[in-house]
Image (tube, rainbow, N blue to C red; front, top):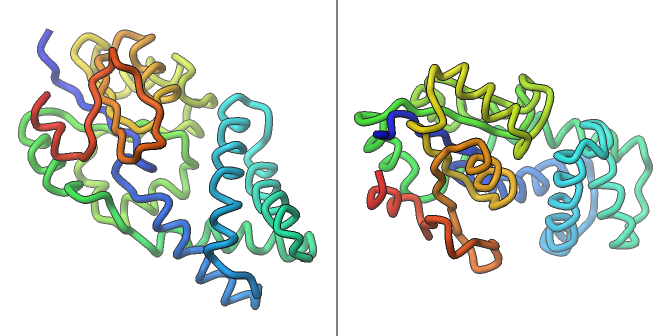
Length: 227
């Protein structure tokens, strides 16, 4: 069946999460007089953040635990003394300021313009409602998408099939005429394939795990080869 619907992940796929997150921490550390070398912090924080997102995806931590514990564990690992009250404030400031930085991956607007004339475009993201909407609005990509599905709105996270089935219903699509594009092999690609979607894996760095049986691209504009 011909593809009619293209579903994108947001973070690490269109929106350059690592770059925007790093700039946000630099800003809020300055605002709160946190005297820590930003690159040292990010080196420790980034894998811890991924760890806690996996726990959140697997329903093992709450949203509040994710936001606090990823910071607490990072500061502890760096032997940096900081109060719980300040960690709580940083967690709030991080969310409040994250959408003020809006770097997108190279080729984002070009690929969205190319696809918009041929398909209906949608977002499926494990991010939080209030944050993801701000990101897409501030980066001026929100109007490309017809349906925007967050894990908050469904109550479960990718790769749970409920997310993908909910997205199909909201977009008035079928798995057979849909393709999922994302960076996470587990959450985006395998999650979508298990429901019957086609899928394209965004492998933007050498550390990203992939599967030889899955279509993959090294940059967004390579998607033109397949759609």
